Length: 364
Image (cartoon, rainbow, N blue to C red; front, side):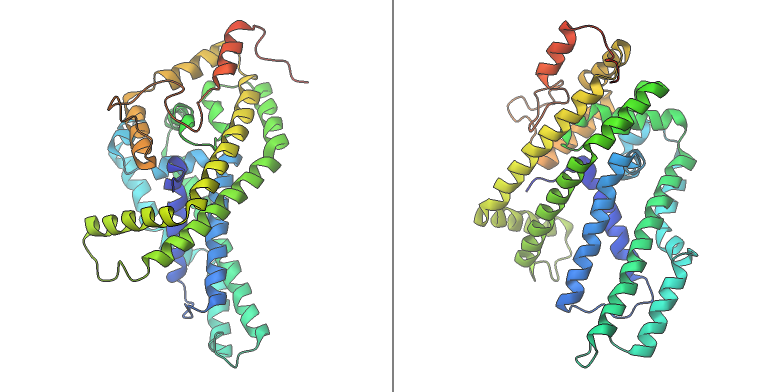
């Protein structure tokens, strides 16, 4: 099943940090009970939704930068110094300690410790439903606060370490790679030096389309969670004792392909979802393109049709991960139309823009 590669990097980062951080808390009751598993799945879902929504709200550029830090060509492309990279990597490595010592999280952990000490194992057979629900309620507050602190910490980490020009390059990267995902970040257009009036127009467009975006995100996460649950069931026991990374990758890949063969409804549902995401993204982009003046439009076209070399490499990696690289030519194909499910710029709009003047359109 194809994932949203560019955004999957940050989604996996946040989910991994969330899971790891919770394991470091003072809560000793990591039970495998069905109720607990359901709660943890909901926590993972909330974390994924928080990340996806961050791209809509504007924090996505920060998470994008963090998600690509491990790529040498990306660091070189945005001009990240060794000192900057080390500071950001250290901040990520110390995330667990940061959360443990956060003044908003520590009291919740202490509340959990006190509750478990006084009430005992919340999963014991003789425990009342009220006690168990209280445990889940405290657990939920801890997890929500951890997610909030992580998002704030990562956002501040980028803002404190990247220069304005480097942040502009990150947003230009998002523009150049917008064809690689059905979800785009409206704030990336700030790289085109928008006026205050243009920013207000874009904010209005975001507000009008936000309900549709939220519905799409919910459907996307539902599909991913259902598939992951099926995949985990199929992997049960297969990776136990397997330490070789290549062997683990092989087992995971073969199992994934087997699950898809045996459950074609997942691929059909994913294709339908990607198609709806493409339609939503195209509508959003066209609305936003109409706000751009001719100079900004030409600048955006150049970023899409003639991206820097490090962006080409990133696109090639994304397409390899997605299984959408052009096998006939053996190389990267620039411009729109080279990858499905959609183009960076719908071709019909590109032609219309080239034949119709009077841009930007006046706000209603």
